[in-house]
Length: 458
Image (cartoon, rainbow, N blue to C red; front, side, top):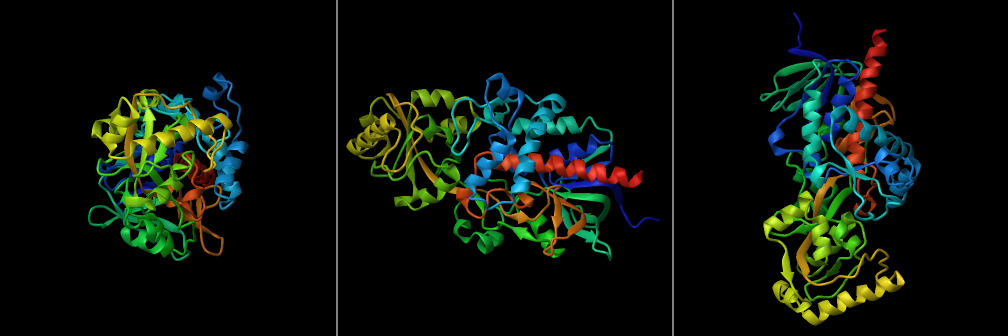
């Protein structure tokens, strides 16, 4: 009689974007796959995201004559993080991204469109591919539906994993799972896709203490257990101080603005109506800048044109519905609605208009967009934590590595559970890095795990 309650070829832990893609990558190769999720009702960071899939050389870019290669994309990532990521892994993820886009469209059946509204800070070409409404929820839903068509796939919700199991040789052989942690599940390969530790206060206080008490906008499921399990087995970790901040959170409203606003022409001021920093910086590092301002807030000002461009998108629509926006037919009216000095706000708007004429200003802003025209909108914004970027050290095949550089047999990690590609600081995060890592590493892990198992049986 077997000591195991269940046996499978590939076991994936976590049903966010990485886990779903890992399960799909393995199932399409014909091996048996079980996907465990502790609580899908809490959602994943992929669902909460804009669903932006960064990729190069896709059909959507070719249709718009947008040139750009995976190599250039990797250079952008490494430039932003100042070389503080494994260049081989960065390039591998970027090269895999076009396969991800093709798979999502052709096999999963997800509608994607290239976001051609505005450039992104640090992007040398436009590369963001989004589902309808620029929301990650359609991506997750489509992946679940596509996986449901595989007879060799099983999904178990409300089935948390308690710990990993290993044999005397140090090979991972299975997990203890279930509501009470008593179910023993054996697997040939295990892929950890449990995301990072943004919802784990103890881990935040240990690794990123400055963000432990700020507003967190990620999934409550991101409690870091996958990283902790790896550490228990002697795995190495990297970039544990790295994180994606967010500078567009509307305090008190449970919503956020879109990072495209300043690229399209938005102007950012403090509670006095004065500009204090360049608007065209990454939204990750902007979070920390805002937290240092009076009352830890800033105000983003924009116009009807920008409002209408972004109104169909999920996050901006939520900001509208939450009541976070204020409107004024004139600068005076908007200033009164925001309770800031009208003359100083007008001076700030005029300064940006003048900077646009020469392509620079005293803060170093280079992307100005079109000058603002009435009517105007404004909203208070603050900084917060979106998700962590540190995790288990892996190789180019997403296999988890020990501190001595050796592979932990049968164990993979991806997405937020593995070390990210943004380096050690929030400034290293480039827009799109999150889903680039999640989806590409998930597909790589799933395919490699399945192919290795099949090869071992031949």
